[in-house]
Image (cartoon, rainbow, N blue to C red; front, top):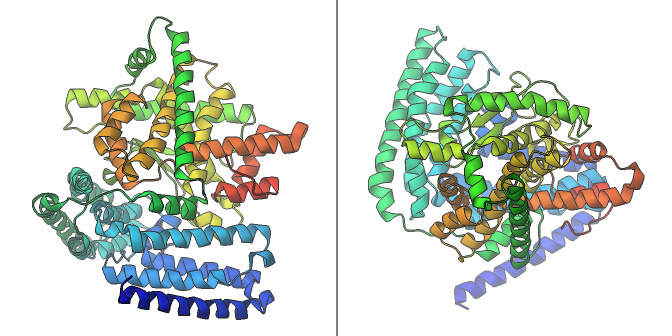
Length: 582
C-alpha cells in the first residue's frame, strides 16, 4: 500500500466516522427525517437535478421547460452531476424506511439503487469517455423528441430545435475531447449510424417544419441546421480518420461491475455463475420445445431446417408496417374477450420506421409519450426497415427475422399486452418515482413474458408455426442473457458472440451481428429473460397465495399497478415477503 493510499484510507475512515455520527444525530429525530413530506421533497430535488443534467429526458417525460437546453457533455458537468448525486444519496440514507408507507419505502429503495447505478456509470464505467454513439445519438434524439410530437405549435417547437441545434457543434467538439481510446466496435457503430443521422438533419428535420411561415425563424433554423450538418460531417471524418485508428479500448466491464450494475439497477444479487446456469437452463428448455414444435410441422426435418423454411414466410419490405398494423386490433380483441389484462385506452399506437439513430442496434421498439405529456399523447411503434443501399442478400436476411411467427411475437412484445399496454397504465402508477423511473427486468421482462403467455392462453389457435416464432424470439433473449455475461467477463469474443446467436440462438446472421454489437454497449441485456422468469415465479407464488380466488387478469392488473419497480419490491407488495425472485 502506497503512502498516498494509506493517507486516502485514513481520510475515508475519518469521513465515514463523521458521516456515521451525522446519520445517528439525524435519526435521533426519526419522525422528522422519515416524514413523507421530507421524502417527497427529496424526490422533487432529485428529479429537478436530473432534468437539469439531462434535459432531453425531461422533454421525453412531457416536462417542456427544458426544451431549449442540450445536455452538457463536458467532464466538468459529469463531475458536477456526480457530486450532486452523492449529496442526494447521503440525504436518502438519512431516511428510515420503517417510518414510511410500504409504497414509499419501495420508492426509497428503488431511488437509492438508481443513484448508485448512475454513480457507477459516471465514476467507473465512464461510457462518456468510450462511446462516440452516446454523443451522436444523444444530440440527435434531443431534436427528434421535439419534432416527433405536436405538443406545442410548430413555431414554438422550431424555436426549441434552433436553440438545441446551436449547441450541437459544441457538444460534438466536447466529444472529441472526452473520447479516449474507445473500443473499436463502438467507433464502428458510430460510423455506421452517422450517415443516417446526417440524412436525418438534411431531410427529416427541415421537412417537419415546412409549414412554418415565419421567414426570420426559418432563416435562423436553416443556419443552425446547416451548422449541425457541417459539424456532423466533420465529426464523421474525425471518427474515420482520427478515432478509428486509435480505437483499441476494451468494451468489457468485468464481473464485479456487472454484478454491481445488476444490483443497483435491478435489485438482483444472484451470483453470476448461478445466473449463467439459469440462462443455459432456459436456453436448453426452449431449444427442446422448439425441436418438439418443429416436429409437429415437419417430422422429417430438423429444427434449423424447419425454421429456415418458416423464415421465408415474411412480407415484402414495403408491406411490413401494414402487416404489423393489421395484427394490433386482433390482439386487443383477444385480450378483452379472454380477460387477460385491463387495457385503459382503445387508441392504437402509430406504426413508423425506426429513427436513424436507432437503426444499427434495434429491429423494433415502442416509443410512448412521457407520463406528464398532456398535449401530444400518441405512441409510435417503430420498426427498422431495410436500408436502400443494402444488397438483396442482406435485405432478405433482415426480412427473415420478420417472419410470420416473429412478427406476432414482436407485436405482442411492443404493443399488446407488452410495452404499449404497460404505458397505458402509467397514469395509474402511484408515485412520481414510479412514473418517471423503471427497471428493465420489470418492463422488458413483462413484454417478453407476454409473448409466451398470449400463446399459452390460446391466441393463434395453437398454430405450431406461431409457436416457433415465439420460441425463436425466446432463444434470442436466452442468447442475450448468456452472451452479455460471457462477453463482459472475458469468456467470449465479439465474433464468438455472433456465432453463438446463430448456433444456439437460432438467429439469422444479420440479426446476430446487430445483437452481438448491441451487447458490447448494453452488458445487462439479460433483463428480458431474467425478468420473464421472475414474473413467472411471482405468478406461481401469487396463485398459491390466492388459491381459487386467483385470476390471470387480477394478477396482471395487480402487477401492472405497481409501476416499473424491481421484482423484489413487487413481490413484497403482492406476497408480503421478500422471498427469492427465482
